[in-house]
Length: 541
Image (cartoon, rainbow, N blue to C red; front, side, top):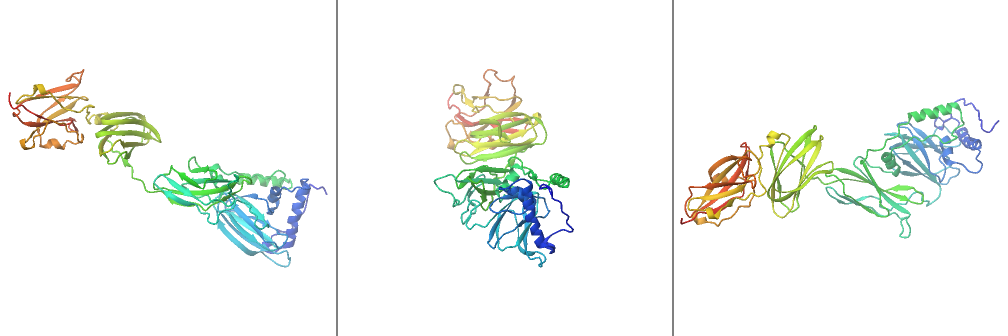
């Protein structure tokens, strides 16, 4: 008979689990291994993976891999040739496994397989077999198709994978709102004289990856393991079965960009992640890789939650939004949401006292970055539907009050008044008389109403001339004052070269101190004050 052809007829299935022909099954497995190697013309070297693919018999001291289909049971075997205990490691990748180990003897008179061991999990698991028996390991992937690595050895103290310390847990050294610091104990294989060991860290918000091949499967996507060249006996039926298995395979796809953060950090045993989000759960896994063998071991991962962040306030459209900054360099974050394309969004930012930094951002990109003293109006154009962040930062010591008015309507936005950069009220000293005072101020904007107020200061509290530089957003101090006049001014009323408006106040008392205020408003909706000024009329004229 040619060496590349083997014909035999099986009257009934041979399976140790039903107690039928246990010894014959073992003989056939061994015979199959020999024939496969004769067929492939291999006399001295046995390609372990090819043999494992056809026989499902785990070799010694060589890692082999199988591809398993979701929710289908696949069996592999181990056939020890003596009583020496053997250590077997099972490393699942894309899916957790449910598996059990049964054994049977070579005695043909004994029927059935006996339960030996069972386990369920997604991490690497090692167990020991002992005895000259036929061991059958049945595995079932629980969540998806997956690859599984197997490694068996009889060598005592043989370290096939990088050694882990006695305490191989990842520890959370520091957890803040946006910062996570973790550490772990070094591998015993690490020495100061070489670079055998490399540590890698994986951070995910979705789940833990207890093995390195699990991480790779989800980070880069898994793929179906095609049969090796020369697998089987070349029958047409086998080839059809191989094609059907390939069509049936549903390997996991790669995670979306940014879902998993993976970084190798050399021999360091600590890592700081600075891009965390507040009040968010994270899974952190650490892997140790032997650079010589490229094999990995996994530390016990860490699950933690960052500290709760301050709730981001939403800017209300067509209303005045008030912000208070009480500490130096304090930052307040607000946001507004657009549900459709918007051609214009108007912003009026009023720093009631001092100077603040103002930014508008979208998806980490800065749209507006400016410093504001007093009041500034900004128009954002052609905005896509999205969430937009507004950041206001205190620039100096002292408390700052800021008002933000936002609208996408030109008509509504025009209701918010303008102020010039210089909001002082000037008094002409040479024109002060016993009953008259002439003042001047800078204008800003169009169609604004300027109301002038006076307040007599009692002689007991007589003060020198001064300007009030307090909160320029408040107008409550004019409630106790007397309104002198309200006039509408537009561009045609003012001096176009200087933008200065003058006004003579009459009917005042001699030798009396007065406080003068100007409040500007638009359409009687919003009001803003100028800086108050105090002056005194002459006693003799």
